[in-house]
Amino acid sequence: MKPVLSIEALSAGYGGRLILQDVNLQVQPGEIMTIIGHNGAGKSTLLRAIFNLVPSRTGRIVLGERDVSALPSDRLLMAGVAYIPQHRSVFPRLTIEENLQMGGYLVRDKALLAQRIDRVLNLFPILKTRAGQLAGMMSGGEQRMLEIARTLLQEPQLIMLDEPSIGLSPKMVDAVFDNVRLLREQGKAILMVEQNVRKALSISDRGGVMELGSLRMQDQAARLIGDERVARLYLGRR
Ligand SMILES: Nc1ncnc2c1ncn2[C@@H]1O[C@H](COP(=O)(O)OP(=O)(O)OP(=O)(O)O)[C@@H](O)[C@H]1O
Ligand SMILES: [Mg+2]
Image 1 (cartoon, helix red, strand yellow):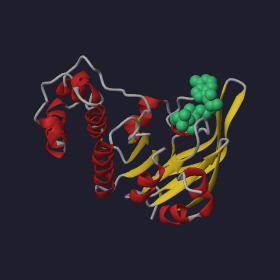
Image 2 (cartoon, protein in one colour):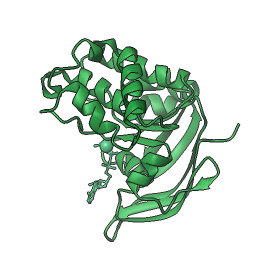
Image 3 (tube, helix red, strand yellow):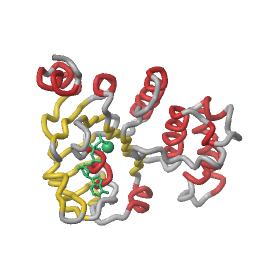
Image 4 (cartoon, protein in one colour):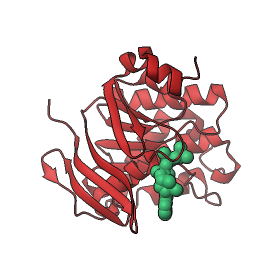
């Protein structure tokens, strides 16, 4: 199968400071790949570099067969890449429905957008029943759902999620991860960064460990969970 995303020799940093070093990875359609690693390892920088949000960068980013290395973020979005940042990005003073309309701003055909919003609301009943409510009044988990719903309006092939479970109750974490699984079932490629290592790997197909800006130990998620070193360093087991 052709990978949705191929990253070749990606290095990136801020100003003169190199953070990511020679990262190579691929994500297939219908696959969840999760990157784990300690605070400051460079996980968010990886997603931001792919989305062309980091000032200096070398290497190649290929989407399907197209080299998209030179594309700015809005063009990447149009090309089928969605990115949900670590910090909440809903518009708190707009309603759920208005947030979805904003999220679909690149869809020029308004009838098509209305159709897609309808479909997305049916996928997320929790949003549908409260479509007229202000997004800022929803819980953290519900806001995450809205962010995920919003990215779907663009019909992306690749969805990048930075710590979707951060700050959520265990029940909400499960709900958000259920939705991530749903995305995989729709054939999306998912590149996720997570600190909730055990749960994230348990829904993932493959994983990678980010250490000091380098991606180490890419493997099947189940093998990573079973790895002694991963368990000791990242699963809080001794
Ligand atoms: N805008 C920025 N300007 C300069 N340095 C930055 C910037 N953003 C991040 N860094 C640095 O890059 C390194 C990697 O940060 P990054 O946010 O990618 O780590 P992370 O693995 O996502 O950490 P966390 O688990 O805390 O989210 C850190 O040393 C950080 O200080
Ligand atoms: Mg981060």
